[in-house]
Image (cartoon, rainbow, N blue to C red):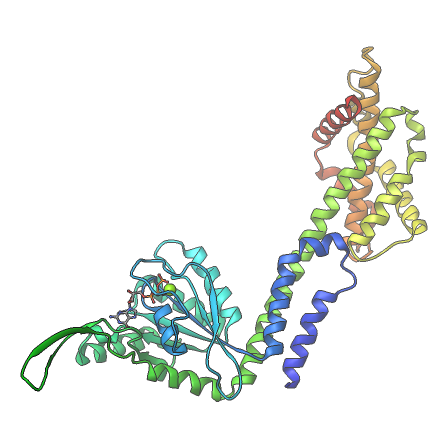
Length: 423
Ligand SMILES: Nc1nc2c(ncn2[C@@H]2O[C@H](COP(=O)(O)OP(=O)(O)OP(=O)(O)O)[C@@H](O)[C@H]2O)c(=O)[nH]1
Ligand SMILES: [Mg+2]
């Protein structure tokens, strides 16, 4: 195994084995991890992947069958015969397995899906056969540019050559080379007849009798086969490793974004659950507002839990310190930002002598709110790599207080808590 290939495999493994990812995050990333596993498998097998790309019914599946020498892929007159990615082994070149990848045809409308397919295919293949059956359409021209941008070696194949006479083929190839100028090398624009139309053949036997029959002419894909062999042989293995390396780079970027997103989602849910738990607990046993701080045990547990989600585990003592620090900011800021009406609005209706259930709901809602803010602030601290950043804790908490929709959070919290209490 070559050095860059081994390095690529190692770095992909490291992505999957990252010890800082807790179970919850890991679980949400299952599809991404499966994709990376598949890529690692591919690299370990050192297989070469050749994929087709092109409009529906240009003969992509037929071309692969002709290359494979078997009816591995379904060919059909209907548009959209191939609906999912399929692949089969091909004969081997220099002992390296070649996988042929069949793909659904691109259509005229869905540009976004087309782009995604192009990325998908290019990411998994070492060489792309872009198949057309005539001059390039606008959609094909766009797809050609997209694929070229991804930087895969590409052959542009004019299939169904049996439908044209030689002068037409010459003119078409010239047009295609113009279209693909700067995207596909001239010698990589080729013709093929993957599954030539059946022909009526009249034979005359020795006795002079005419016999008519329909015959299936042989496929002519030699130019394509030769070009594939040349491209791969020119440095097949390194090419595969290089491509996989490029793809691996893109995967790790995407995965980084996904991990951040999943961590945030998991943390959001945690914060709400803990806040609700605290709200319900306080609602069940209403305590004087001044003692709310004493009920900080849950907040500490929340912060410890969050620290694991962010892969930066805190001890209970550290989490306790963080909770106190946040609480201090909140206390200092509450008056400045909201005035006294924060509490008044939470308790709205209570003094009017309503039921204890409502009082409980209001106190619960405040408890919910306190935990919610603590969670958000701790989340900001952890997402920033266990740091308050240059602006310090006061500003971070201030931003959180300013930006959240206090009234709707209190209203929702109260409703949720009361629902729980009644149940
Ligand atoms: N005349 C001629 N017809 C061909 C050739 N190759 C394929 N066809 C016909 O073109 C039609 C489509 O072939 P497929 O291989 O199913 O095309 P595809 O690009 O895989 O189509 P989708 O899977 O629907 O995207 C079939 O009717 C084939 O018989 C060829 O070289 N010459
Ligand atoms: Mg097909």
